[in-house]
Picture (cartoon, rainbow, N blue to C red):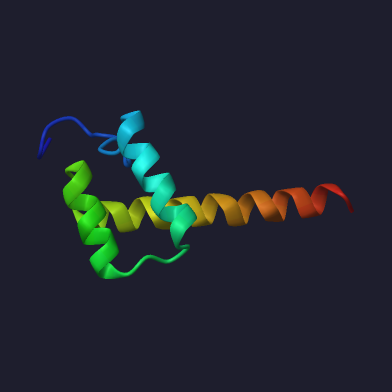
Length: 74
């Protein structure tokens, strides 16, 4: 097995303090700029790419939730 045991995706951004910063960024801007992602990444100790992935996942979750709730009423 190359690289050791598999780590679940998103496991890097778990602590509540990191999550709080990311949720604040998402509330500030739905699609933050590269500079914003870099700044937040530095402040919480993760790469801007991980911040971007987290934001994309949150947007997808919100989209799915909206779709699920709209189909329930039909």
